[in-house]
Amino acid sequence: MLIKRFLPLFIFLGIFIAFMTGLFLNPRDIPSALINKPVPELSLPPLQGAGIGLDTADVTAPGTIIIVNFFASWCGPCRVEHPALDRLSKIPGVKLYGIAYKDRPANSLIFLKTYGNPYDKTAADLKGRNAINWGVTGTPETFFIKNGIIRYQHIGPLYEAQIDSDIRPMILKLQQEDPS
Image (cartoon, rainbow, N blue to C red; front, side, top):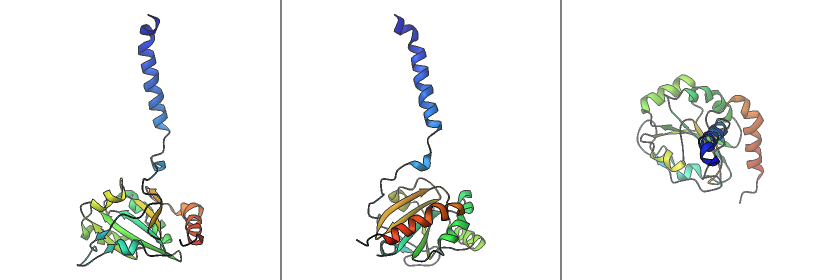
């Protein structure tokens, strides 16, 4: 009888605790299922013209740290992270590739002309199919790859302050690892 009387209170407390726990979770802490796994197959057209803009061979080059950044011209946080990408592109031994996610190529080209093009190669994922294979949940998202293996995934914009504190040390560590 006593349990029935307090059952609504217990249900409320359970919901309240679940809600409060959710408030303190960081969506950037979601572990990627692709960490330490081979990169998904990739074959994308370039932003402009015919041919292959970016393919699996580009992102599996041995010995090089490959950074793949999914971006879009309509993405506000992509504008915010652009100076950080420019700094990343200047790190020796790093190749930075951009994939325009569900964006019109003309808009992506205007975006890159306006903010600068830090990418060694840029491709278009017009329908977002490749992004699904990579587990992209939104833009911007950035993947760090060594020897065809995804080593780290960053969800959300990269900031310049993170380059020196987090990203550069991680890249140096990856560069020093055994190539096998």
